[in-house]
Image 1 (cartoon, rainbow, N blue to C red):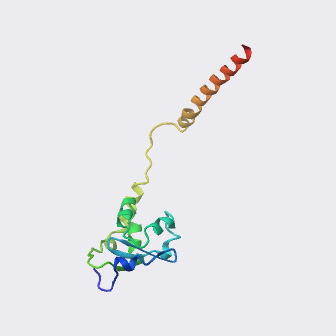
Image 2 (cartoon, rainbow, N blue to C red):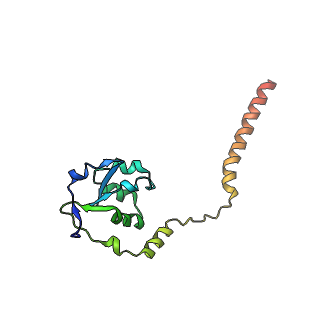
Image 3 (cartoon, rainbow, N blue to C red):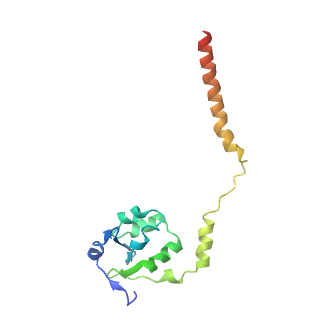
Length: 142
């Protein structure tokens, strides 16, 4: 734990739970996300729901990128008492994280032509339309 970090209790963090003063705890780090509320990709409501609490589980469940994890250091204002952690966020390479993030966005080609989706939707629609037209026309004749 860094010696220059202020130590806050969870009850002190709980006092900061408004959109004007919003703190959360992630992995024992006390994070002031007040200035990040509008920038958060998931919307400010997500952060406000966890304001004043330990949001470690929610943060890890979403699976944030390395860039998001490094933002924790930018907005960190202190730590909870008794927590120890490695500063591995500072040491991870940016190039490696970008490669991992980009591999998540690869879309696999499945070999189907682009018009296949069009046919899969409109052929059944055409068959159903023909059936109902036939039914309607046979009622008129009888």
